[in-house]
Length: 569
Image (cartoon, rainbow, N blue to C red; front, side, top):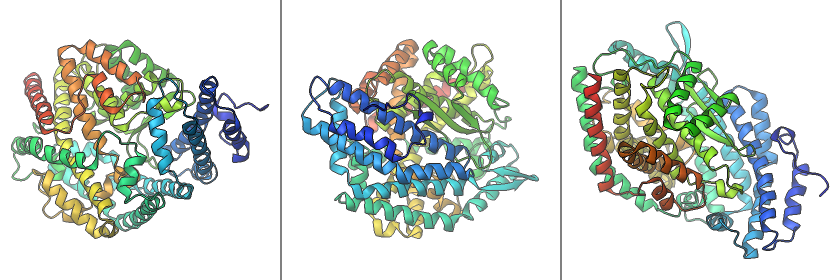
């Protein structure tokens, strides 16, 4: 072809399909041999990276401002006119490579993934996948618009979080109930959206001749190394090895707060009555102090973070009409990450930035891999990258120039974090078990009232220790407030599996921090060229769903909590 693809996404983002399609067509027509396959894959990767970065930048624009109608229009135009066409064209290229019988070096895992995707692909599903993403935008818009009036000022849900740390219990309860009432006001809208999500997902599975959506999604997520039954075993292991420890943490909190019942608004205040940790005044200070932490973890990782700051690849502050949550995405062509979050001045914001930075470092470490398909990482290990970074960075919260905390504050912050690790596993089990139930009981799941009941039953199974009496409506609609359930079905067990891997990496770091960080970085650099168990092994961990592995992780975490509490006293 005489026309060349641009080297930057700015020159590509507004191309119509009629300008993009010839490049896919030329790749489809080009002769594919052992001698030409590397160049063919390089050219395909460049085209894919342009498309993927366009998608990522358009999607980011809709989350940084959910009220930006022009950003939404451009994103929807891409979803309607470019996304389905590129998916179909890419599938034809996958088929071409698979039928050639060629096996490029370092491409064994990508070929396995392509075979699975080829088996699952149906052109009839392309508009449905587009519709699913649009429904996700609608969910973001509903949640992003939720505000309340607090002390005379319009306040977002994340901006209320500092109030939950107030030592004034009545004030905490007032803020919590105000937020809960506002969230319940959208109950009907979210329930209606839920039915539409399920309708799309059930049709996706039917079109692909899958027995149900869970089977469809399992293959879509390229889960080869574990099954839904393994997830069930993991839930049971958590109930056995973690729930008792979590209940003891809640009970200790109740005693320290000197209350007869631990209520939902009692979970974030310091149980000793100390003022809330305020690690930074604004996001500029957060960025600077985090830089100092990474300088001590590893000079190269610190360099990656500095690159992001200089390139303005961080959007950290909370504001109205910003989508909820936090994420790290990748701009594929430039092989650079972008971090999005909603910081409001809390210790949790520090943990979020450390977490998302772990994802960002994964992008940098695997950037050397030649082909885009080699850079696709199993989500279970992608979360190891992020969760392990929280723990690997934790020794440096009170050290270096311009530290985040004093030694006593850092010990307190680490205790909070380690307690949250233990408390997270039961919550993860609720979220994953709920999704397993939804997609195994499709008729019942289309009735939001049945979903409410199932969520409440799972909550009672795994989340003992907090009294929700009189708050039954708020409790059973908790699934409304877990965005993964709506936007990323079945994407949550990854966090539980990855956290178990991360604690094992941390255990290694307690013996030799430098060697553990080096193994962590080597594992990240493998990208998607080896399987999930091998990635865990490379990082110094074992891929496991077993109660004994969980028990060891819980015992180590509890022992470290006891050690740190002595420092914080």
